[in-house]
Length: 94
Length: 405
Image (cartoon, rainbow over all chains, first blue to last red; front, side, top):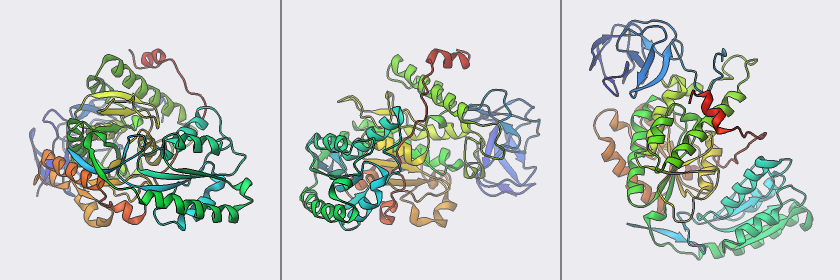
């Protein structure tokens, strides 16, 4: 099923789904069609291209964090697979 | 451009006209509440501080309570003290009186207890209220308005719709000569370069960066690796559930609510700008909803534009808080808590600019007395006084070095 989505800038590496979406649903993005690999809730992010471990995640044309593991396009991107060190003690486990 | 407001003796302009009953210390809270409850049109500024504090922490309490008493949304003030507290009730009373506002002072230990203080407070308060209610709205320039901006209960729609719409309204306010305030510096991490490019002068750019780095350092020093679970998360469970995955993602969405105007200065907590300075300000403080909103009201904001995707009922006793959401699901689920719907930006039905214009017009109606959702509920939770434990003054050069500069 085709689902509504939004990419803030075409250079971003994630889009947001604008309705609760299911695995197998498809979104249209400036980077082409992306099939969702899992259920993704309203306003959550999905990778529009494969992302490598350590690669910056780009939204609003800025780095919002970096990948904790490599994922294919269509993966739900959230704090389970994306890290961010700002505001934390560098190198610490928190 | 003008609106109908209350012109005070010191020249400042209010959008509401309250008798504020203010305890100088928490020991007077119940007495203050019981006085205000008997005086329709009075608000009680209940708080948990005023004693057993030192240094900057006590200074923030004093500065905030004085700023609330002198605030232009307040027509008159009744100060109620206990008598032995560290923040002297007379200091608060004198500071309010110096603004030319009608004020009275009662001290519980001098009056002989709670009952006597309440009796006398209702009597004096009744007289002050009569003075307050004799004041009338007059035409005032929009340049006299300052709006504080705040996100609370952020989800991913806040950054897409509600914050850009508030930003568009703030651009209109600043273009009309008015002022807006952005704060919550711990939630601006990652936007320093963007904000520095918007600074009116190179000195302001340095102040912006140093203030954000200092807050980040304070945040880092507050984290405790011995605590597990979510105790060290920098954003709330609701933010995560709403699709926000990091403090920087939250910041990049949050910064939109300041619009695109140049930043003219960085203000300390609850401190008015230099006389005559207007435009977009940054206030140096973190993001506890009540503390940061009270600080910006202390800087002179008469209203608050508050964006929330998750839904939030909180209000402030002195200033109308306008709730804006970009989440149509939350809006239909808790309609009574909202004032402005920015969700048509997401469904593509309306543009940010169009809704920004409508929000600006709505803010002017609120300035002229239209009640907000939080006012209808009597919401006053956002009156909280900023705290600072310990003296955190690091050399800005040392903090810049931590960021590889």
